[in-house]
Length: 341
Ligand SMILES: [Zn+2]
Image (cartoon, rainbow, N blue to C red; front, top):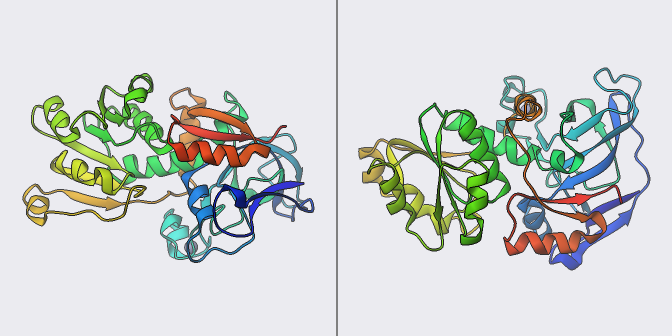
Protein backbone atom coordinates (compact mmCIF):
# COMPACT_ATOMS: atom_id res chain seq x y z
CA UNK A 1 0.00 0.00 0.00
CA UNK A 2 1.11 3.54 -0.73
CA UNK A 3 1.79 6.25 1.88
CA UNK A 4 2.94 9.86 1.55
CA UNK A 5 6.09 10.18 3.63
CA UNK A 6 9.12 12.36 4.17
CA UNK A 7 12.56 10.94 4.93
CA UNK A 8 14.22 14.38 5.15
CA UNK A 9 13.00 17.93 5.57
CA UNK A 10 12.86 20.46 2.74
CA UNK A 11 10.84 21.42 -0.32
CA UNK A 12 8.16 19.49 -2.15
CA UNK A 13 10.89 17.31 -3.70
CA UNK A 14 11.10 15.62 -0.28
CA UNK A 15 7.55 14.25 -0.60
CA UNK A 16 7.70 10.54 -1.39
CA UNK A 17 5.06 8.01 -2.20
CA UNK A 18 6.42 4.92 -0.47
CA UNK A 19 5.29 1.33 -0.76
CA UNK A 20 4.70 -0.04 2.74
CA UNK A 21 3.42 -3.39 4.01
CA UNK A 22 -0.34 -3.49 4.57
CA UNK A 23 -1.13 -2.83 8.25
CA UNK A 24 -3.04 -5.48 10.23
CA UNK A 25 -5.62 -4.26 12.75
CA UNK A 26 -5.01 -5.20 16.40
CA UNK A 27 -7.87 -6.50 18.63
CA UNK A 28 -9.20 -2.97 19.39
CA UNK A 29 -8.39 -1.52 15.96
CA UNK A 30 -10.20 -0.95 12.68
CA UNK A 31 -8.55 -1.16 9.28
CA UNK A 32 -9.60 1.89 7.26
CA UNK A 33 -9.38 2.08 3.49
CA UNK A 34 -8.67 5.78 2.99
CA UNK A 35 -10.75 7.59 0.36
CA UNK A 36 -9.64 11.20 0.87
CA UNK A 37 -7.19 13.16 2.99
CA UNK A 38 -7.15 16.86 3.83
CA UNK A 39 -4.01 18.97 3.64
CA UNK A 40 -3.24 21.43 6.42
CA UNK A 41 -0.55 24.08 6.75
CA UNK A 42 0.82 21.69 9.35
CA UNK A 43 1.87 19.36 6.49
CA UNK A 44 4.01 22.14 5.03
CA UNK A 45 5.58 23.02 8.40
CA UNK A 46 6.33 19.36 9.09
CA UNK A 47 7.81 18.98 5.59
CA UNK A 48 9.99 22.08 6.11
CA UNK A 49 11.02 20.73 9.50
CA UNK A 50 11.24 21.73 13.15
CA UNK A 51 12.79 20.06 16.19
CA UNK A 52 11.19 16.98 17.76
CA UNK A 53 9.98 15.18 14.63
CA UNK A 54 10.94 11.58 13.96
CA UNK A 55 11.61 10.57 10.36
CA UNK A 56 10.60 8.89 8.18
CA UNK A 57 7.09 10.17 8.87
CA UNK A 58 3.75 9.63 7.14
CA UNK A 59 2.10 13.04 6.69
CA UNK A 60 -1.48 14.13 7.22
CA UNK A 61 -3.89 14.85 10.09
CA UNK A 62 -7.24 14.47 8.27
CA UNK A 63 -8.61 11.45 6.44
CA UNK A 64 -11.92 9.84 5.55
CA UNK A 65 -12.53 6.28 4.48
CA UNK A 66 -14.36 2.99 4.90
CA UNK A 67 -13.84 0.32 7.54
CA UNK A 68 -12.47 -2.71 5.72
CA UNK A 69 -11.75 -5.03 8.63
CA UNK A 70 -12.23 -4.95 12.42
CA UNK A 71 -10.27 -6.46 15.30
CA UNK A 72 -11.93 -9.04 17.57
CA UNK A 73 -12.47 -6.53 20.41
CA UNK A 74 -14.01 -3.72 18.35
CA UNK A 75 -17.50 -2.80 19.56
CA UNK A 76 -18.39 0.53 17.91
CA UNK A 77 -17.77 -0.13 14.22
CA UNK A 78 -18.59 -2.68 11.53
CA UNK A 79 -17.12 -3.41 8.12
CA UNK A 80 -18.46 -0.88 5.62
CA UNK A 81 -18.83 2.02 8.08
CA UNK A 82 -17.76 5.40 6.70
CA UNK A 83 -15.40 7.06 9.18
CA UNK A 84 -13.09 10.01 9.79
CA UNK A 85 -9.75 9.80 11.56
CA UNK A 86 -9.30 11.82 14.76
CA UNK A 87 -6.54 14.38 14.13
CA UNK A 88 -5.00 14.45 17.62
CA UNK A 89 -5.01 12.71 20.99
CA UNK A 90 -3.36 12.60 24.40
CA UNK A 91 -2.12 9.75 26.60
CA UNK A 92 -5.69 8.72 27.43
CA UNK A 93 -5.11 8.17 31.15
CA UNK A 94 -4.01 11.43 32.83
CA UNK A 95 -6.20 13.96 34.66
CA UNK A 96 -6.50 16.21 31.59
CA UNK A 97 -7.37 13.34 29.24
CA UNK A 98 -9.98 11.93 31.60
CA UNK A 99 -11.52 15.38 32.18
CA UNK A 100 -12.20 16.06 28.50
CA UNK A 101 -9.18 18.33 28.20
CA UNK A 102 -6.88 15.97 26.35
CA UNK A 103 -5.44 18.82 24.26
CA UNK A 104 -3.88 20.03 27.56
CA UNK A 105 -2.25 16.60 28.10
CA UNK A 106 1.56 16.77 28.31
CA UNK A 107 1.68 13.89 25.81
CA UNK A 108 -0.90 15.39 23.40
CA UNK A 109 0.17 15.02 19.79
CA UNK A 110 -1.23 15.79 16.37
CA UNK A 111 -1.47 13.05 13.77
CA UNK A 112 1.09 13.56 10.98
CA UNK A 113 3.34 15.48 13.38
CA UNK A 114 3.95 13.64 16.66
CA UNK A 115 1.96 10.57 15.66
CA UNK A 116 2.16 8.76 12.31
CA UNK A 117 -0.08 10.49 9.75
CA UNK A 118 -3.10 9.37 7.76
CA UNK A 119 -2.10 10.04 4.14
CA UNK A 120 -1.91 6.36 3.29
CA UNK A 121 -4.14 3.91 1.44
CA UNK A 122 -4.70 1.77 4.55
CA UNK A 123 -4.66 2.68 8.24
CA UNK A 124 -4.92 0.47 11.32
CA UNK A 125 -6.45 2.82 13.90
CA UNK A 126 -7.64 2.32 17.49
CA UNK A 127 -11.43 2.47 17.47
CA UNK A 128 -11.41 5.55 19.72
CA UNK A 129 -9.27 7.36 17.12
CA UNK A 130 -11.99 7.20 14.45
CA UNK A 131 -15.48 8.66 14.37
CA UNK A 132 -18.48 7.94 12.19
CA UNK A 133 -18.86 10.23 9.18
CA UNK A 134 -22.20 12.03 8.61
CA UNK A 135 -24.31 10.24 5.99
CA UNK A 136 -25.09 13.39 4.00
CA UNK A 137 -21.55 14.26 2.88
CA UNK A 138 -18.95 12.72 0.60
CA UNK A 139 -15.42 11.62 1.49
CA UNK A 140 -13.78 14.78 0.19
CA UNK A 141 -15.94 17.04 2.35
CA UNK A 142 -15.45 14.67 5.28
CA UNK A 143 -11.67 14.95 5.02
CA UNK A 144 -12.02 18.75 5.10
CA UNK A 145 -13.58 18.79 8.57
CA UNK A 146 -11.78 17.33 11.59
CA UNK A 147 -8.65 19.42 12.30
CA UNK A 148 -9.97 22.84 11.30
CA UNK A 149 -13.37 22.35 12.92
CA UNK A 150 -11.90 21.09 16.20
CA UNK A 151 -9.56 24.11 16.20
CA UNK A 152 -12.27 26.63 15.34
CA UNK A 153 -14.83 25.12 17.76
CA UNK A 154 -12.31 25.30 20.60
CA UNK A 155 -11.61 28.97 19.80
CA UNK A 156 -15.18 30.18 19.29
CA UNK A 157 -17.15 28.01 21.74
CA UNK A 158 -14.75 26.84 24.48
CA UNK A 159 -12.28 29.73 24.67
CA UNK A 160 -14.22 32.83 23.57
CA UNK A 161 -17.58 31.47 24.82
CA UNK A 162 -19.50 33.19 22.04
CA UNK A 163 -23.00 34.44 22.87
CA UNK A 164 -25.89 35.40 20.58
CA UNK A 165 -25.43 38.99 19.45
CA UNK A 166 -21.64 39.04 19.87
CA UNK A 167 -19.65 40.62 17.09
CA UNK A 168 -16.95 38.20 15.92
CA UNK A 169 -14.07 39.22 13.68
CA UNK A 170 -12.58 36.30 11.75
CA UNK A 171 -9.19 37.26 10.36
CA UNK A 172 -8.43 35.43 7.07
CA UNK A 173 -11.79 33.75 6.61
CA UNK A 174 -10.61 31.92 3.50
CA UNK A 175 -8.43 29.47 5.43
CA UNK A 176 -9.77 26.14 6.63
CA UNK A 177 -9.94 27.36 10.24
CA UNK A 178 -11.37 30.72 9.15
CA UNK A 179 -14.17 29.27 7.02
CA UNK A 180 -15.09 26.91 9.89
CA UNK A 181 -14.99 29.75 12.45
CA UNK A 182 -17.36 31.90 10.36
CA UNK A 183 -19.92 29.08 10.25
CA UNK A 184 -19.62 28.20 13.95
CA UNK A 185 -19.93 31.85 15.06
CA UNK A 186 -22.99 32.37 12.82
CA UNK A 187 -24.60 29.20 14.13
CA UNK A 188 -24.27 30.60 17.68
CA UNK A 189 -26.08 33.78 16.73
CA UNK A 190 -23.09 36.07 16.35
CA UNK A 191 -22.68 38.89 13.87
CA UNK A 192 -19.64 37.87 11.82
CA UNK A 193 -17.17 40.20 10.17
CA UNK A 194 -14.62 38.43 7.99
CA UNK A 195 -11.42 39.66 6.41
CA UNK A 196 -10.25 38.18 3.13
CA UNK A 197 -8.19 39.03 0.08
CA UNK A 198 -9.79 41.06 -2.71
CA UNK A 199 -10.76 38.05 -4.83
CA UNK A 200 -12.28 36.08 -1.93
CA UNK A 201 -14.71 38.60 -0.44
CA UNK A 202 -17.76 37.20 -2.26
CA UNK A 203 -17.00 33.68 -1.08
CA UNK A 204 -16.58 34.86 2.52
CA UNK A 205 -20.07 36.39 2.31
CA UNK A 206 -21.49 33.29 0.67
CA UNK A 207 -20.18 31.22 3.61
CA UNK A 208 -22.04 33.32 6.12
CA UNK A 209 -20.10 36.49 6.93
CA UNK A 210 -22.41 39.48 7.55
CA UNK A 211 -19.68 41.98 6.62
CA UNK A 212 -16.42 41.53 4.76
CA UNK A 213 -13.25 43.61 4.88
CA UNK A 214 -10.59 43.50 2.18
CA UNK A 215 -7.41 43.02 4.18
CA UNK A 216 -5.25 44.21 1.30
CA UNK A 217 -7.16 47.39 0.51
CA UNK A 218 -8.82 48.46 3.75
CA UNK A 219 -7.75 49.35 7.31
CA UNK A 220 -9.29 46.49 9.31
CA UNK A 221 -9.52 48.30 12.67
CA UNK A 222 -11.08 51.40 11.07
CA UNK A 223 -13.68 49.33 9.23
CA UNK A 224 -14.52 47.40 12.42
CA UNK A 225 -15.10 50.66 14.26
CA UNK A 226 -17.39 51.82 11.43
CA UNK A 227 -19.43 48.62 11.41
CA UNK A 228 -19.76 48.47 15.22
CA UNK A 229 -20.36 52.22 15.77
CA UNK A 230 -17.00 52.64 17.44
CA UNK A 231 -17.39 49.71 19.84
CA UNK A 232 -15.11 47.10 18.33
CA UNK A 233 -15.47 43.32 18.09
CA UNK A 234 -16.33 41.23 21.17
CA UNK A 235 -14.27 38.36 19.82
CA UNK A 236 -11.34 38.41 17.40
CA UNK A 237 -10.00 35.14 15.97
CA UNK A 238 -6.51 35.35 14.52
CA UNK A 239 -4.12 32.75 13.16
CA UNK A 240 -2.16 35.04 10.84
CA UNK A 241 0.16 36.44 13.53
CA UNK A 242 2.56 39.33 13.00
CA UNK A 243 0.95 40.78 9.85
CA UNK A 244 -2.49 41.21 11.46
CA UNK A 245 -1.65 41.41 15.17
CA UNK A 246 -1.89 45.18 15.43
CA UNK A 247 -5.17 45.29 13.53
CA UNK A 248 -6.55 42.47 15.67
CA UNK A 249 -5.70 44.16 18.99
CA UNK A 250 -7.01 47.53 17.76
CA UNK A 251 -10.28 45.95 16.62
CA UNK A 252 -11.15 44.54 20.04
CA UNK A 253 -14.03 46.00 22.08
CA UNK A 254 -13.84 46.72 25.81
CA UNK A 255 -14.02 43.34 27.55
CA UNK A 256 -13.22 41.64 24.25
CA UNK A 257 -11.35 38.39 23.75
CA UNK A 258 -8.62 37.85 21.19
CA UNK A 259 -8.06 34.16 20.49
CA UNK A 260 -4.88 33.13 18.69
CA UNK A 261 -4.27 29.68 17.18
CA UNK A 262 -1.40 30.34 14.81
CA UNK A 263 1.21 32.78 13.61
CA UNK A 264 1.69 32.03 9.93
CA UNK A 265 3.33 35.39 9.11
CA UNK A 266 5.55 35.67 12.20
CA UNK A 267 5.35 35.02 15.91
CA UNK A 268 6.08 38.42 17.43
CA UNK A 269 3.34 40.86 18.42
CA UNK A 270 3.41 43.98 20.59
CA UNK A 271 0.86 44.39 23.37
CA UNK A 272 0.24 47.80 24.93
CA UNK A 273 -0.46 46.76 28.51
CA UNK A 274 -2.23 50.06 29.26
CA UNK A 275 -4.89 49.30 26.66
CA UNK A 276 -5.10 45.67 27.74
CA UNK A 277 -6.01 46.43 31.36
CA UNK A 278 -7.90 49.65 30.81
CA UNK A 279 -10.08 47.99 28.18
CA UNK A 280 -10.28 44.80 30.27
CA UNK A 281 -9.42 42.56 27.38
CA UNK A 282 -8.16 38.99 27.25
CA UNK A 283 -5.69 37.32 24.92
CA UNK A 284 -6.16 33.56 24.76
CA UNK A 285 -3.89 31.00 23.12
CA UNK A 286 -5.59 27.98 21.61
CA UNK A 287 -4.60 24.79 19.86
CA UNK A 288 -6.73 21.87 18.69
CA UNK A 289 -9.58 20.66 20.94
CA UNK A 290 -10.89 17.56 22.71
CA UNK A 291 -11.82 14.61 20.49
CA UNK A 292 -15.31 14.52 22.00
CA UNK A 293 -16.22 17.87 20.43
CA UNK A 294 -16.16 16.24 16.99
CA UNK A 295 -19.36 14.34 17.89
CA UNK A 296 -21.28 17.62 18.26
CA UNK A 297 -19.60 19.16 15.20
CA UNK A 298 -20.52 16.16 13.04
CA UNK A 299 -24.11 16.16 14.35
CA UNK A 300 -24.35 19.74 13.10
CA UNK A 301 -22.87 18.70 9.75
CA UNK A 302 -25.44 15.90 9.55
CA UNK A 303 -28.18 18.46 10.30
CA UNK A 304 -26.91 20.60 7.41
CA UNK A 305 -25.84 23.45 9.72
CA UNK A 306 -22.08 23.24 9.17
CA UNK A 307 -20.21 22.30 6.02
CA UNK A 308 -16.67 21.30 5.17
CA UNK A 309 -15.36 23.76 2.60
CA UNK A 310 -13.44 22.09 -0.24
CA UNK A 311 -11.49 24.29 -2.62
CA UNK A 312 -9.59 21.84 -4.80
CA UNK A 313 -9.02 18.10 -5.05
CA UNK A 314 -5.81 16.43 -6.30
CA UNK A 315 -5.11 12.75 -6.82
CA UNK A 316 -2.77 11.71 -3.95
CA UNK A 317 -0.05 11.00 -6.50
CA UNK A 318 0.07 14.77 -7.13
CA UNK A 319 0.75 15.66 -3.51
CA UNK A 320 3.69 17.89 -4.48
CA UNK A 321 1.45 20.05 -6.70
CA UNK A 322 -1.15 20.14 -3.91
CA UNK A 323 1.49 21.44 -1.44
CA UNK A 324 2.63 24.05 -3.96
CA UNK A 325 -0.96 25.22 -4.49
CA UNK A 326 -1.57 25.46 -0.73
CA UNK A 327 1.61 27.53 -0.40
CA UNK A 328 0.33 30.07 -2.95
CA UNK A 329 -2.53 30.94 -0.58
CA UNK A 330 -5.02 31.08 -3.47
CA UNK A 331 -7.46 28.62 -1.93
CA UNK A 332 -10.75 29.24 -0.15
CA UNK A 333 -11.18 26.35 2.25
CA UNK A 334 -9.40 23.04 2.02
CA UNK A 335 -7.11 21.31 -0.42
CA UNK A 336 -7.91 17.59 -0.55
CA UNK A 337 -6.06 14.51 -1.79
CA UNK A 338 -8.21 11.86 -3.41
CA UNK A 339 -7.10 8.34 -2.48
CA UNK A 340 -9.75 6.53 -4.55
CA UNK A 341 -7.58 6.81 -7.67
ZN1 LIG B 1 -3.13 12.60 28.98
